[in-house]
Amino acid sequence: MILEVMALSLSDASFSSPLEYEDSVERIAGEVQMRADLAVLPAYSALLFAWNCSMIKKVSGFREAVLSYLDNCEEVNGEFLNSHIKLAKNLNLCIISGTTLEREGRKIYHTSTALDRKGKVLGKQRQTHLSALEQGLGICRGNELQVFNTDLGRIGIVVGNDAWYPEVSRILALQGAEIICHPGALDTDHSSSWRQLSGMWREVQQNQFFCVESQLTARIGGESFSAQSAVHAPCEMTEGKSGYLALGKTGQEWVSAHLDFTAREKVIQNYPLLSFLNREAYRHYFPQIYASIQKQEVK
Image (tube, rainbow, N blue to C red; front, side):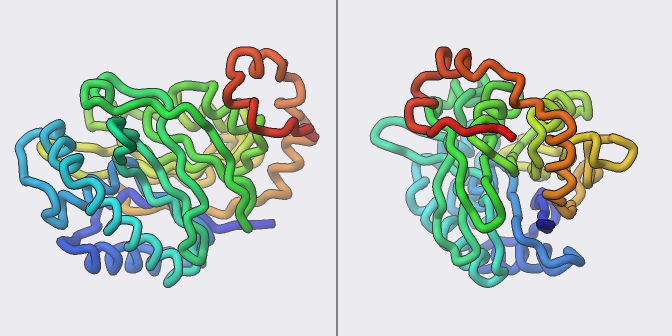
């Protein structure tokens, strides 16, 4: 099986209303020469959506922008989800719609939502490890990791800061994830290539899945975000053993690539990395995650 995927940075997504946002994403999708099966948007995409559509106050600081968003998050998130339901249907595309901030009771979570080609919500993934900034904003940690069964294969999501915590990707791999989607947002001061290499590129080489990494390129409330969006694969199946099927330049609007599942299976057959792991150790240290999943044999 060969799939076609793309990662969007929203760098040139000029919009001031939900309808203009939808038109902008459809334009970007139309520029991809191949017909894509999966699109991944970056972290803080709902915040950018709210900022550009004047659904929150035009404040001078990023923290203040987030707080203004949280005051109106139910309306923003509803509009944001509706836009992606339309896009999934119109483009016949599975979409990982970046991230939102959502309230559940008195708690706030940084969350990514997966939609299938018909616009149906497959599920949500909450970020499980927080940055100092996110902790300061009162965001809470998620405590579950899950893999979604889709017509494209088994998909997991690594949200934001979770890219730098290896246990997140490893547990998703042990649950059978074939494609990892990473909505990211690195501020300009921390967007070096070395910082990125220590994130999802490393996790792909250690777990042998594909990864579609979308990095936000935008300015919100005085904070600038910019990094390289990419499509990763095990080094053995990439040109020059680089680990990249596609690597955009900083701020590039989109990147796309083919995912060859047969080539990946050959890599795994030659070196079945996950079969060498001590699964019982993972079950011991992460009992809540393993309580709800069935044991899966790695070929």
